[in-house]
Each structure stands twice: as C-alpha cells, then as structure tokens.
Image (cartoon, rainbow, N blue to C red; front, side, top):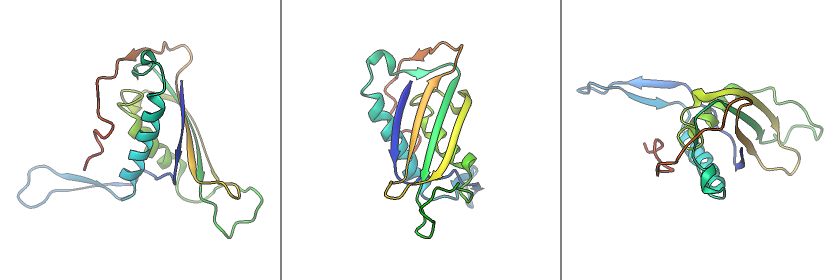
Amino acid sequence: MIEFRVWGVSQQMGSKRAFTPKGWNRPIITDSNRSLKGWQVLVRQAASTTLNTLPLASRGLLLGGVRLTLAVVLPRPKSLAKKLSPHLKAPDLDKLVRGLADPLSGLLYRDDSQVVELIASKRYAAVGESPHVDVRVEATQGTAPMRQPAMGRSLWEGLEG
C-alpha cells in the first residue's frame, strides 16, 4: 500500500479533441483542460517522492487488481457558509478521478485498467484548509501484490508535450 497527498487544486480530465493539420497524415490529440498536464506532473511527483521512501522490494509496479482510494478537497468559495455542505457543482467526481488515475499508470501500476475497486469523494475545504487530494493505492483483497521491478521509467515520461 502507498499513501500520499497532492497539494493543489485537483484538475479534471477534459474532453479530447483531435485534428489533423494540413499535410499531416496523423492527428494531434489535445485536451480541453490546459491545467491538466501541470496537475498530472504534481501527482507523479508526489507519488514518486513517497515511492522513493519505500524499501526497494516495494517499489515495483502492481500487476494485479488495484484498489484506488481518493479524497478530493476543493477550494472553498468565500460565499459559502462556515458549516460543511456537500460539493454539488462541477467538476464531476468521475472526471477528477480520471485526472488522478492516469498519471499513476506506469508509476504505481501498469495501466489504470487494473483499478477494479474505487472509493472516491469530493468536498469543500474546511475554513483555513488548503485544497489537496489524499491518495491510497493498494492491491485488492485476494490479489497477490505482484510487482514488476521499476525499469528506470522517467517521472516525466508520457507528460512531455
């Protein structure tokens, strides 16, 4: 199991757009959320920093089923009363999950298709609390936590653009 916190405002995975420039034979795919790549770098940095504190035997990729637990704490609007109230507005929780699960692929598990259990919540930050996301990644019950040794994959791989 690995647990870590990512400080900052969680970004949602936006809609993808594809276009083919004149004279090209392959499309370029862009994301509608311009802040997503920066957020994914923060997620990978937080995961990598925590991963580096673990014993070497625990640092490989999980190969079996994965349980992903996320607690997203979003900025509190100044107009919101001091009492706690549910976060019922955008961004959608499922899009926030996609923005967090994708950058962990290749770092903690091979692919986000291995996530077979998901526990996720979003809420407003308490008064004086900073926005952040708490993340826990673990092998699922009944699945041996098989690990593939980390093969020197760059923290930035897949995020260069």
